[in-house]
Structure formats: structure tokens, C-alpha cells
Image (cartoon, rainbow, N blue to C red):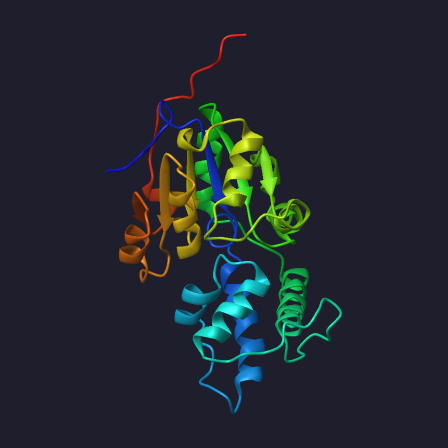
Length: 249
């Protein structure tokens, strides 16, 4: 059984949606609403499971539009940030999705996965530093709404990515920036991810442990193929051992 051994790993970097907060389903529903309206008469509807996991999950919003439409053989103009939400452009479709997601979160709030909260408390009790990352510009608001912001030493989100020019997953830049802020080499940190591009990013970044979270039961084999060291259905399955050694003053 794979464990998080804090004698070997001194920090853990968590993805947000689907790992810390139960917001992946909200993202998926918003994408389906937007894409189905656009695809009508052009292609089959957006599959809220298969298409979301393969083409959208874990990617920056505009990359998700580009990747999904490319998979359907559809090309649209890039457009710009001032495009009307829902306009037939990369930016227009992305803005429509963002508006739906924000409204859903505003109306219904956000829940954190209890097993993830328990793991965070256990890690911190044993001296482990923690970070949360997301390609979303709404990461801080989402994590705060879930009541778990205080359980992270570092947060790196889409605002940081835009400011620093960090590419999206599967590039490991977001994870590496989190490790840098935590003050640990990537090889001494773990990554916990539920998206295929994120698992690949963790492996490409040289992290000491890459944990895949496969809540759908559909991605375990591919997560392992992309570099996950272990895949669990829920973080309650991932024991923690040891303590992070205390550095001398």
C-alpha cells in the first residue's frame, strides 16, 4: 500500500476542483450548458463525463475550449476578452462558462470533501506544509467559501498564472510555483490530482509522489500510464506515516 511518508515528503500540493472541493461537477455542468448550445446542429452533445475528463478537466478555461473543439474538428475565432458571453469564439464560449460557474457558486456555495479535510488536518498535525493550486481565477473564493483556506500555507491560482505567465497543465508550472513558495524541491513534495493533465504535470515536474484521485472509477489505468504512483477513489484510502523532521534553528 502506498502511503504519504513524511520522512520522505515534506509538503503536499493539492489540486482544487475534485480534490479539495466538490466543484468539478459544477464546472462540468456549466461546460455542458455552454457547449450543447453551441454544438446544436454541428456535432453530438457534450458528454458531461467523458468529454469533461478528457478535454476540459484540469486545463485553463480557454485551453479547455480549444482542446474540446479541436477534438470535434471545429474551429472558431480566438476572439478577445471583450467578446459577449456565448459568442462563437474561444473567449465568448469561455466567458459564458465562467458566468454560469460563478452564479452557481454564488447561489449554492461550495463543499469540501470530508476525507480531504481530514487528510489536511493530519498532514499539518505532523508538520507537513500544504498548498492548493488551480488554473481558475476563482480558486481563492472557492476555497474560502468551503471553509478550508486556513489549511493551506500557499495558494497558486489563475490570477498568479496570468501575472507570472505560467502555462497551464500538463505543464508543471503551477505545481512548481507552489513548491517554490513552500520552500521545498519538487522531489521532496507530493502532488494530489484528479485530472489527467494534472497527473502528467506532476510527473513532468519531478515530484516525489504523484497521487491520482479517480472518483469516477474511469481513469485509474490512464492515470497510472501518465505517471501516477498510486490512484485512489477517495483520499480516505491514503494513510500518512511519520513526521516532517524539524529543522534546527
